[in-house]
View 1 (tube, one colour):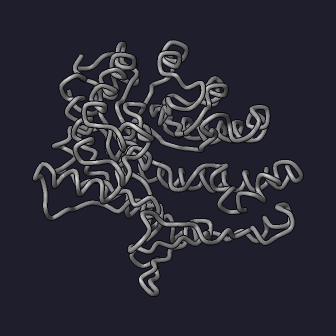
View 2: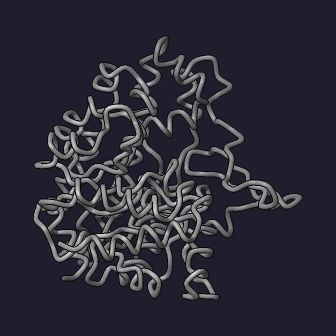
Length: 389
């Protein structure tokens, strides 16, 4: 089977020839630069590493096509880079690299001591109220942005081939962007004392997301590539390790209806695409709400969070949701366990999640810097040996 056929089977809750595998199909199912290089070197696969630095903030890369084929990865990403025109965007002073993101947040990275970029400015933090501050949110040159995104899409589309094409988001989610724009402490206070301001900011982010998606979809329709897009991928981290990030009623009031607006727009314009939602954390209580909002695929399936036990998720939602992730725990096992512990967990999870389809194998979120190469290969080898239907 091709990658497209294999993932189509998973999305249709059918068993394919093997469990589909994703590495790099989105910016939340990827691998960090150094983890990638170290893992490939362990097997002598590559010395001259080629990759697209798709998200320098997270330090994740899209492996080159030669490696993706070797790894039997079934999906390919198309979409904007997180930092537009990164080589021209960045500034370097005293070895510290600084970039500015879509909403004017500044991020810095010192290669000598930092693994990732750290946010160092919050554009609307200085204002007393969020309602007052909205007018000062930086705007976007949409004509230039559309040109940059379309250029990326032109360069990426040929790699889809017979794989599953995933059109991926351009920025973080609704609450994530809000926190970064306003500042964490002030935004949480705003949800208690200035809900109109919170909603006004959320509406601006929704508007921007729809404008981005229209760029992608207009490009797809004008170039005849709409059938290559099987999945559209959005996000918002709605959970912590033990609970949702806001009261469930408030999520239902201000966040989920706006997610529904985005997913409804996407499905109206790309009716054959399935909608992926990335949300870390303990979100079991709102999963039915997400399904009602249009979500078909749940990622990263953080089964270590409260209430996210895999057998229960599969039993209660496996008939309507495809689980894209949850293949191995990245908080303890993949990064700190032995290769044998990794193998054992991958086997256990395949036994739970693979039967009947509806499962695409990926770890819980990106493969991070601290994952030993031997553990990466223990995960991958076990999937190849044990992931056949």
